[in-house]
Image (cartoon, rainbow, N blue to C red; front, side, top):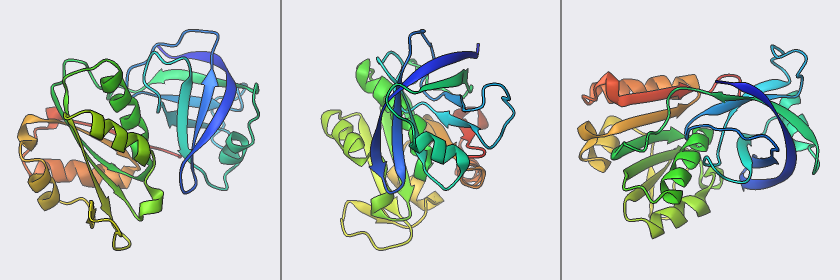
Length: 237
């Protein structure tokens, strides 16, 4: 059940162009599942304040000493407040929220992700690695250009050290300099050729509403049952 928790800001970490992770410490325990999110409350007295209170996914796995949230920064008041946090500043969150989560019993999963939608995926992959689960994972991660790939170093390290994690990058707006990147938007052909056993997998789709709807239609078109598609739209990010 969601509760309001006080956090103390610890540090920020750059992840890609305009993308930063923000780490917090908490004196209270907070149990959440990989794939869930929180509502960050810069205006605790008016939770419905949409300018200063917004939803962000956990990018840290459960059980860490810190809680991490990651955002693509903009000129919004919320982004500015987030980016100006100093060590020790207090921030309140309402958490945990969200039902489309990873379960340890899942043996074959796939992710169709664009841009900042990678945030909850990092929490899930971190959880899988931390617990040494035998889940077979395929991630297709789309960005406009190479410099916008968030968490690339961490993702590559996980893939290198775990034979059950396979990551495929695709770039949409410029021809990649590296042959390891695919070119173009995620489409039915790309998914069916990259994920041969797609009908056996549970698909996770996170991101802006347009991206989520497009990927959900793709999954339906290639024959994935609706019970095997878990999706979460990022609203007001």
